Length: 257
Image (cartoon, rainbow, N blue to C red; front, side, top):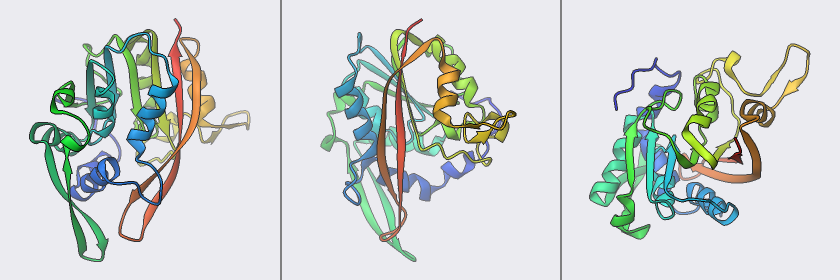
C-alpha cells in the first residue's frame, strides 16, 4: 500500500539503517539489564489477562520490525501488521520470508557486534505466515482494515501527527466486544506531534494539568471502557554501555458499543 498522507514529522528518523538495527535488537535480542523483551512481555500480559470472545483477526499498528506481530500470530488466525517505516517493514518481511536476518549493534565508537535472528527460534514458519506486513499510516488506515478482535498499538500514540484521528477510527475497526490496547511512555515531542494535537502533557485553558491517560479516557468514551492498566518497562540498547530504560503504560480498552 502506498502512503498518500502528508509526511509525518520525525518519520525520516525511522528509515536509517542504524535505527532499524537498534529496533531489531530491541525486538529480538536477549533481555537487557534483566528487563524482559518488551514486545513479548506485552503480548504475554494480554493473553494472560484478557478473555477474548474471538481470536480471528488482529491488527498490530506501529508494528516496527515485527516481533509483536509474530507473537500475536501464535494466538490469532490472521494478523495485519502495519508501520509507517518502509525500513522496518522490509526487515520484518525479510525475517518472515527468509527465516533469518543479520544486523550489527554498536559497542563503542566505531566498534560493533554482528548479530543474527533466526525465526525458527521464536515460532514455526506456518504460524509466521499468518502475518501480513505492509507500510501505511495509522491515522489513515485502509478501509478493508476492520472487524478486529484486537488492535495493538505498541509505543505509537505519542508518535502520531494527529493521534485523535487514529482513536476516532477505532470504533470502526474493532468489533463490539473487541479490544484496543495502547502502550506508551507518553513522551510527547513536537518533532512528531504538533502541540495542539497532544492528548496529554499540557495545561488546559482553565489552568488544569491534563495527563495522557485522562486524554485517552476522554477520547475513547463512551465506545470503550478501560479493562486493564499496567506498567511495562523496556530497555533499548544504544551501545555496549549506554541504554534507554523506559516504563511504558499499557492500557486495554474494551469496545462496549
